[in-house]
Amino acid sequence: MSMRLQGYTYAAIGRELGISPQRVQQITTAPRAVRQAIALAAEYRCQHCGIQLGTSGSVHHKEVTGLEAEPYNDFPNLMYLCISCHGGAHTGLFGISAVEHAERIRRTTENVRRNMNIPRQQRSGRQK
Image (cartoon, rainbow, N blue to C red; front, side):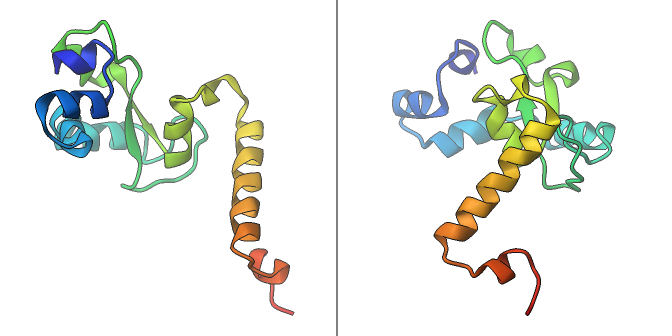
């Protein structure tokens, strides 16, 4: 845990300990009861964009470095996010508005569908 609190990535910790990055993440993640409490407190919605998630959201640590082990997984340091916002939280997304975020999701979805060569009428869900 101390390496994570010092800012090391899961991959770097895994290399140091001889385990996979996924195993490092499992070891350092918030306990199930805490994750469930975060989801319930957020009413199962993304705390950034508001999309309904049910139980499929991600728990995000607001602060990673400079903390002791206890506050790292404590309630005030955690947020319930959709996968898009969780990725964005790690790349500076929170500096943009919810409208811009929704537009980015729309453009990304359109680009994925375009790259998969799905005809336009199927992309919009309409049948001709």
